[in-house]
Amino acid sequence: MDNLQSGDLTIEVADAPDAVFRCTWKGKSNERNPSETLKPWFEALLAAVAAKQGTVEMHFEKIEHFNSSTITALIRLIQICRKSNIKLVMIYDQTLKWQRLSFDALRVFEKNDDLFHLRFA
Image (cartoon, rainbow, N blue to C red):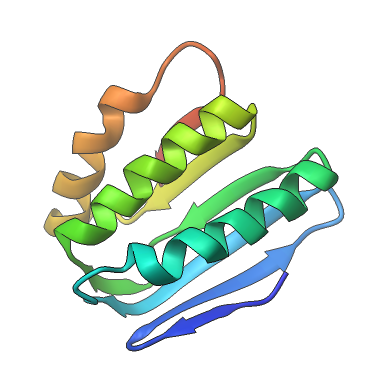
């Protein structure tokens, strides 16, 4: 799986032997419509994960900023993962107020199906 480089945003992917695809977000996601870039990249990622019956870990501890349009793209990713039966974990830095507020809002998507979890580093 290839890394993503788009504007000020970089997402580095490392797939571990246990089929965990660790995606580390760096820089800033400040594009007006990040879904144009993120959607096809997410589709390729999920195809690779599904082929290995793996799990996606999205790490946001190193990202400096993302806008509300990025949150919309992340919500769509959560929905696609759940529909596709792919486990998704999002890890964030709770000491950063903006991250805590953004990810706390995503808690409504946590269900008892073990497909989506939020964790803090």
